[in-house]
Amino acid sequence: MTEGEVVEAGQDALVDPGFVHLPAPGLRDRLGWSAADWATFAQSWGRLGPDLYMADGGRYRRRRHAAFAVRGSEISRKPHQPHFQSRDYNPLNGDVQRWFDPIELEIAEGAVFQAIFRDLSPLFAHLDGRGPEADWHCEAHQFRIETAAGEIGRPTPEGMHRDGVDWVLVLLVDRHNVAEGTTEIGDLAGKTLGRFTLAAAGDAVLLDDRKIRHGVTPIRALSDAGPAWRDVLVVTWRGA
Image (cartoon, rainbow, N blue to C red; front, top):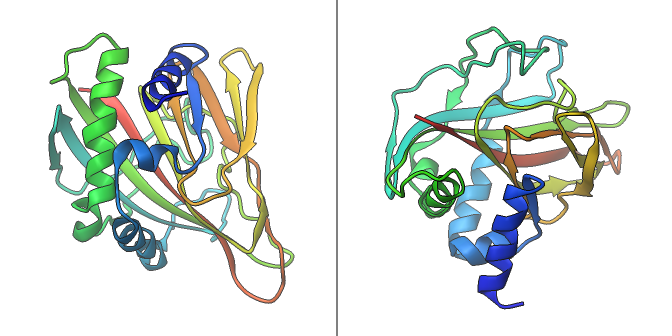
């Protein structure tokens, strides 16, 4: 298939069934960041603060967060604000204003972040039948899920869920000394539509959150010899 045919097939999958898995380097090739851009972006996961809002008492998640206003190619960061989900979407941690450390300015204004917003926002607007200058409220979440010998790391402790938005990107940044962590995709009726593992840096999945429920199975350490983690970026789009 040509590059254009691959892109068109991905767009068709977002319409029906509502998700597309993009193994690396598919998203990078579409968005066009460099190896140096990616290195700067990925290294920032080593500077995430702890998530202190886990209702299960877990201390296995680190996180940063930021909100953006996007209109066409115009991207502006909103004042730092809490992340909020109702319990309808997050039965574990919902109905709480959760304040996380802000995403670092260098990362938010870097090539990878800017390419994601600049390319995918018009795509989602087109799929929704909105104009290319459609307004979006976007939120970005840097996650590190940690685990160790005898412990379990839970990427989605709330289980299969929706995020309560329109569109979602999940981008794998790194896996270090971990096994499992399988992404599971289902429809709103509970039917399983796909299972795959984001295994290589740059593997990604795009979701229509109005049609799709998603979750990730727990991770465990491959070796007792050192730390283990799974790093992802999650970006959401909601029509403003």
